[in-house]
Length: 212
Ligand SMILES: Nc1nc2c(c(=O)[nH]1)N[C@H]1C(S)=C(S)[C@@H](COP(=O)(O)O)O[C@H]1N2
Ligand SMILES: [Mo]
Image (cartoon, rainbow, N blue to C red; front, side, top):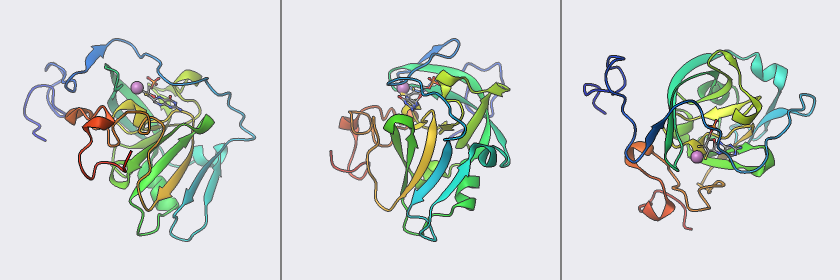
């Protein structure tokens, strides 16, 4: 990843923005998801880490407990696999690595499933989940997330297409073998790197996803 050409991370703000191949820059922040927007019920809400944990037990946090964890800020663009890229989102939330530290996976974990309300899910390679910019966001541009953008908590995986960033996040499942999430089982690429334009599952190469 060269950092020298215009628009690359670390270049001057006046350089032309680099948008992944086949994407178009859109102004503002479109709302995009499948299904209804869930209502937040604080007394029923928890975040659950389960599956192949190191100790074999699961870990849950109430909203109050989870949002008391240390926060971090990440600025990133959001690339929907159907084409629009919205830019300069300032996310504030809990680093995924913090979750990993507090609820360690067993050594044979290779992937995670990020679960949202109503059964939406996105699978990620463990290295995508542990990437330094991956976070569980509570705020956007200095304000609480709005309901349609994922309040109270959404996963943000800036280096992958938007379908890998579940809104209304409720769980992280540690997997010892890969399994397809919602869009990954419905024609979208199992890995979803926008810079490689990994949009559709028919583009997957050997080793990039479980059999369809
Ligand atoms: N729970 C849930 N999260 C979701 C989706 C969804 O359908 N359900 N759609 C994803 C897709 S395809 C995209 S592009 C982004 C869009 O995020 P935005 O609406 O905040 O722009 O949310 C992702 N997160
Ligand atoms: Mo999307």
